Length: 179
Image (cartoon, rainbow, N blue to C red):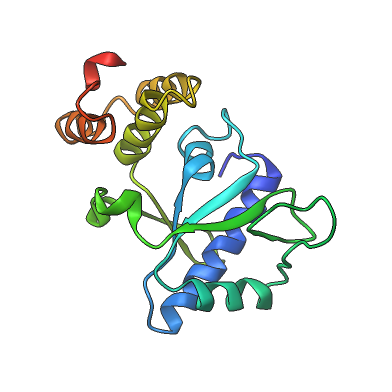
């Protein structure tokens, strides 16, 4: 891997947590959001946290605690996630379904993280579409640039699927041609 050290360390912990979920008979949590963008951009775009999707939040939180994560508390702390004392990144469970059920779970990328296990990452097409959806909402104008950069880095992606997903995420206001 050729990522920044903090990201690699977080990815290794995610793979360990993911394998622990599978050992319990559950699906792997899926990395979405900025963490997936950082993975697909090889740390050209950095994140401050790992957003995860899992139907088994309580079980994943137990595993995160066993791996040394703590939930921050006290005055001025507004995080809903978990922090590992040795990392500069937090982990947060953001949903129980991938992009409100619109993402194709069969497209989730599984990556082998050396001896630490396997991590599941939302497909690059779904990440680009998600970024375009955030852009189209008017609340995150910078997300169009992220989507464009990801498409440039992954020009071999499934463009038909990507166009459909962008249209779904933007209420048909945008398609692939907007990038």
